[in-house]
Amino acid sequence: MHPSSESSRRLQSGQRLDMGAVLQTLAALLWLPQAALLAYAVQGVADGGGLDVVKIPALLLLIVGLLRAACDACGIRLVFKKARLHLSVLREQVAASLAARSPLDVRRPASGLAASVVAEQAEAIIPYLTRYRPARLRSTIVPFVILVIVFPFSWIAALILLVAAPLIPLFMALVGWRAKAASEAQMIEMGGMNAFLLDRLRGLATLRTLGAVDITALRLRDAAEALRQRTMAVLRIAFLSSAVLELFAALGVAMVAVYTGFHLLGQLEFGAWGRRLTLGEGLFILLLAPAFFEPLRDLSSVWHDRAAGEAALEAMERLSGEGMLLPGASGKSILPQTDFLYADKTAPAVDIHDLHFSHAGAAASVFDAYALHVKAGERIAIVAPSGGGKSTLLALLAGLVSAQGGEIRIGGVPLAENTAHALRTRMAWIGQKPHIFAGSVRANVALGRPGIDAQDVTSALRFAALDKVPQAQPGVGLGEGGGGLSGGEAVRLALARAAVDRHVDLLLVDEPTAHLDSVTAHQITEALLQLAQGKTMIIATHDPVLAARMDRVIVLDADASTDTSTDAQVPA
Image 1 (cartoon, rainbow, N blue to C red):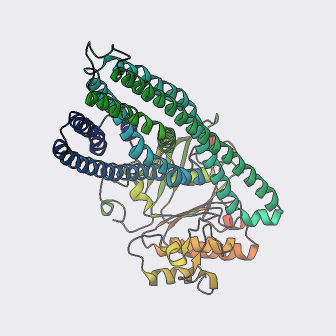
Image 2 (image 1 turned 180 degrees about the horizontal axis):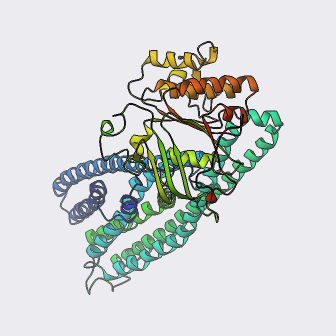
């Protein structure tokens, strides 16, 4: 599921010529015949030819001008269209990569940072592709062609251009290194501020309770000021690069003009291969001199786009970096679901054998040769101290993270890369803090699953005792994170999500009664027991009352690596 970085490297290296950039380069080269026609017409008038000498060059000049404008317009359109397509592909690849990351991946990018990169910073790739890359192609081809054309007329004029030209990219490269570093720092600052803002908005109610709104506002202002300083640093470097180019371009054109003028006046006899330049030839050289520097000037004006674009590409590639993958993220199974998932139409047994797992970077293992058997239709409670591996065990059973060794079987089917996606369709996850999406209650219950209609959602809300709650009616809109619902109502919404799916026969429940008052906890417990009828249910909990209602209690030691199958009956 990780996007290939090949497309990003192709964008940066420019190995494939874009037809739009070629057309823009051709439009720039069409100035050469236009300059030749102008010089020819002026020479004809100077020789006493009159207006008759000008008519044909003027007509040809108009035709070439129209062709040049058409090539430039078509090239710009093609480049922009292809750049948008590239950006769409990159965004799709990054989104697929983020979706393939396990929720337990500690290196998973923060939501605010990822949103900032994909939605905002990625737009810097468009100017990079539509302006910088075509300008780079023109600066590579057009000056060389002009130099080849000018050289037969005057070697001294060609030498002036040849000496002045390398100084421009040299100084631009020196400035560019600093510009890229400044752009990367700006984007990191922007992403950090967005992540900070999103985190504080999510916890706004807590900040108000603790009276920390003013402190948060001050921190946000400091972050905005730091971003302003980063942005101004980038702009200063961009203006510096433009000033450097304008200086050398102006000096180069001035030196060519001075030489040509004194040569035509007879003050400088050398530099034209032992002969005297005509008025038309001198004018032709003068017309080509600004055109020689024009692509380099264009390149300088978009040099900041290069720095920002490459920094954005690197940020996108970092989001697509390797991480802890979600098993079965491809959504493909080795067999159709009907072949092995629902053939028996009974609750699945759960078997764990020789399980090994440790978190990334952790010295100790969470599970070492752990084994567990849960009978079909059994309701068990997993009890352990904080950090004892309860939630990790549920995550392993749900296929949210891959074990380093051992085997997990759900209904006799091994939980593996090619079966995890299909097996998850028969599971329901109910946590202590269910995530509520911005949208209607109906959409939050159905979650886009096929085959769930409005009547199913209404029945599920009735089962979860939400049908009488005004803020939990099917058509009511909810804010991101569950604004408008209490903690107990959010857990009930998670119960409705599980109840609405007729395919679910394995319930994985993580601390459903945590932080709830005793009355609400009792109601949630009764609803869970009712929902678990005919299903297998595994609950991780600290609640002794909830654990006592289960068929069996599994006690995980603080060191779960030494616990192979620790089953404990609930004391009377």
